[in-house]
Image (cartoon, rainbow, N blue to C red; front, side, top):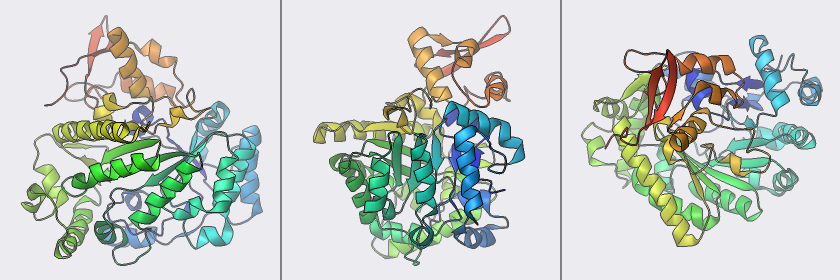
Length: 430
């Protein structure tokens, strides 16, 4: 079994992430990003063990038979051997619906030297394109913009490319992404990749994930204006969160790198300095930080203020460069800021619009238009985990309900024992 296709099935992914159908063409990642959460999920052991293991970048496929299984799944829905047994029903349903596939969930699909040598990702993309299957690729690698891959992507009707770039400051990125290894592509190379792909007419997204408070916030305007000038189609931003299992040690390592960045003429915000560059402690200094699903999230009020500013910067950049760059919030609290129906913006791509609805954004849109939204209305919208949507719709927590506790401007209303959600403009922390 190659365990290629996966549907991310945490409560958060089911409700908030319409791009939760994912696949990884390789195992691990060659990059050295100390803010990365993926090692806590994909590599066992403590922080000191999991990061080196995760960076043991290696092939997933062993032989032609592995590719034949993927072909059979795309051709006739025969998913056995391509995913875990417990997910076979859901993966088959996703393929039948043509749920857009995200290549590069917890691995680098264009990582060198493996992709240059074996071209496993190229082979998978060829199959997807032959079946006219919608997909996006997520990467940090400039390899995606070389001639062979550009020509391949341009032959697709339903494709998007997402490049992760959180800052234009290479001094900072060398500290928190490369850590002296030099393996993570520079800011300039990734920016050039975005510009080249955009010029080729390929739908491009910059993933500003994570936004690191007091660290990358100051450079976001320069980054977003540069993206607009380059013709990038969409920006998605999401604040750094910590997996609890690794959070404190991740933060300690980031502190070392930020200290080193400071010694090399870099600077961070005064509030973070007061916490000795320890982001984990800084997060917990706010009264409205959130812990859920094994993760520590940043202050809700700080997210609301900062994400509103980021959204406004995108609008300013569009005015400055006469561009049409859309914006999506990767933090569900500020879904209302999205200028598309999917925080990844892929509903702007032909063939994606009806196949990648975001449950919460759909809820929010209906509630804002009609004043309320019912469960029956939401059942009309596709979701591979429809039964779980019903469960989470009605899920009570210590205070409030699961959904209203995570999305600004939405509030539950119980009528005749039925839960509905209503739009309330005031439910937004100042």
